[in-house]
Length: 125
Image (cartoon, rainbow, N blue to C red; front, side, top):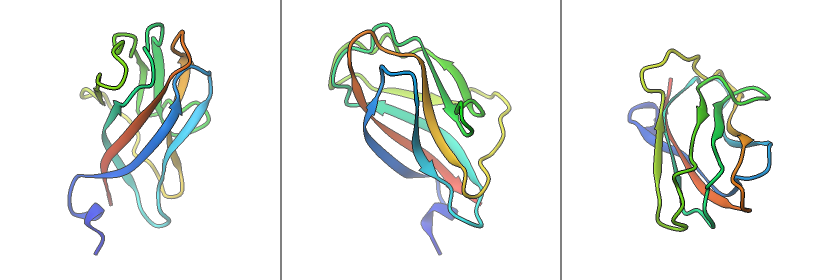
């Protein structure tokens, strides 16, 4: 049996995510026959300051807005060392159905060109 069905685990790591350009980046695709319950996301290893990056959405759909919206990462100004954990903060959200794409969408991105590594944690049902 897959450990992702029995424990909270890192389901994906995506490197070089563009944190400036307004677009969606897929971070994890839910396997066929499974439901994904996202618990938290880690933003790390930034290539530059995220100053100005005041609005990022996470979730499924074209706008990646079904899990957590309006995340402000603008305080992550020290490249390479700042790390931020995002969780649902008790907010009600929809789980991720099979074959859906969980991702991040930049709404108001960083002022400078910047990439980051993003880890997604949760479990499968």
